[in-house]
Image (cartoon, rainbow, N blue to C red; front, side, top):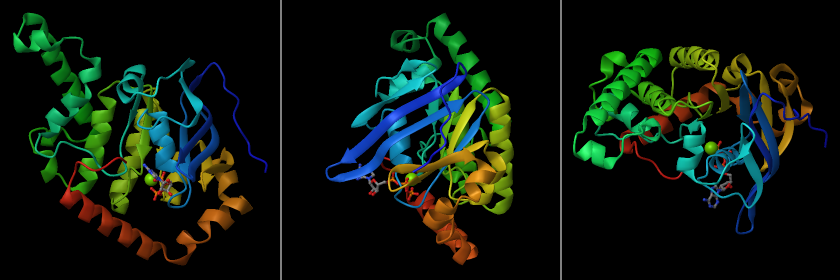
Length: 290
Ligand SMILES: Nc1ncnc2c1ncn2[C@@H]1O[C@H](COP(=O)(O)OP(=O)(O)OP(=O)(O)O)[C@@H](O)[C@H]1O
Ligand SMILES: [Mg+2]
């Protein structure tokens, strides 16, 4: 099968090669190669169960891939989430994971911990260094809330935010670790069309700040507007990769993906997604492994 791949370059931010993830007899991700370069927004699409989230989990150290390696800016990453975050990769989750009973600002401050040098004793003893670091962290967190349009809600509890704003808060918290690469797992799930357009603008603005983006999304229009390059996963394998317009008209993609869920009843699919997402947000904002 022919697939276009982008060779790693000096501007390669992410270089995942030969990533395979097996769960017992099931191969959820099979020998996937993917690069993301500086200044790029890359899309990852594919039907439900194709292995997209599993691939993200392999990139971020939540799963130890059965085979393959993941390099960030030329250095192979150990599969440990905190080390991956420290190296410069941040992510959001398909099932929102916020601290529901903490404020919006506090959630962003949590995201800053990998970038704060002051240790536990400094915090407990309230040493001057800690106070200074805390002030700087707060200032940076407020800046990120301005950037994501949440500043007016800094003191609200996360659980009281509407669903679309919870998704934005997850992005603000991810940005708080000062990443060079941001991984977004279905950032517009549950959003209305206006919120989706705003999310698009936000992601462009993130890219313009020099942060590369890899984004999973089912909303094809969103992906096609946003992405420089799109990779398609089907049953764990990358079947096609290329510029958005080329991928969109690729027969294999249409057959494997676009043809079935989207052409039939886009309105219904969207409504079902919104409903499911809202139910999820209400039941808990501290989800499972995804
Ligand atoms: N921890 C796990 N243990 C066993 N199987 C798993 C695990 N995580 C994922 N899988 C399986 O791997 C496959 C890929 O799942 P994954 O969640 O990565 O798909 P996806 O492309 O993100 O789908 P969706 O679009 O629905 O989010 C599925 O068959 C899923 O059941
Ligand atoms: Mg998923």
